[in-house]
Length: 299
Image (cartoon, rainbow, N blue to C red; front, side, top):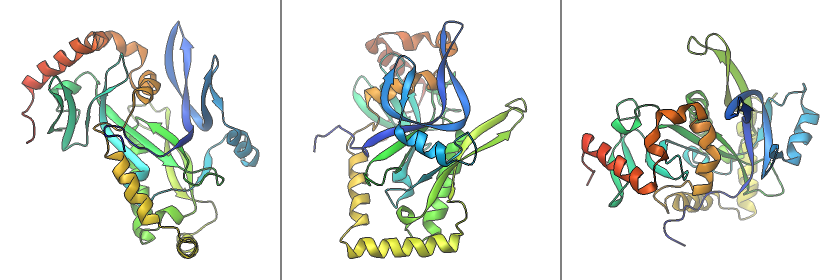
């Protein structure tokens, strides 16, 4: 295996609850109140919809797609949902610092070093909204490719917190049979003071409509036994995936970073971070200056 290359689940398409729009000559993210399933191909109008989008809309109770039946391909919740605090180089889309609130991996002139991660509120490099939570949920939608995934990317605390909790709870309740449970993504909304009483939409993970938890667990046990009888080894799949994610310092590639920059750093923020429009060499120097104000590397 090539070292330094993150081996992530094969991606067949994307799941989103928003899009990029043109407004006053600027490209800005716009949230939506429904799911959209796209392929990995873009044209002048944006991302091309995946055939599954139309198929699921035809089955939906309303014209808007607000639930998507899904299956997890791993039993380990943290393999299905990858979430860290992340800071990107706004020119190249490359990750510069990625942390979990305890430790982080940070790009410096000496290479990638490990430091304590105090969270964005307390980190000198994160001031001005440079560092944000970044989550990637991998789910299976296509029974024809049981190890292929559709990816939902989010920078929202509500979605990340809710998905992490649901995955952990369902895995515990089923005795570690998360990949066998009949699940669905559900779009929910809530209003807060920060949203000026306007609805904010986030993604939840629930059992399929009409299925109780006890029924879901019984179904999961049956599916697990059938898979074992066929010779399928779920523990090995999780083990290999864990190794693949750990094969690189940063599991996001350059292309992925560029895809999310417009949502991660909206255009109106660009004038607030001139240093990240510098050359890569200058950017690393700025990171080094920030490190001098921060803490020493973890040995």
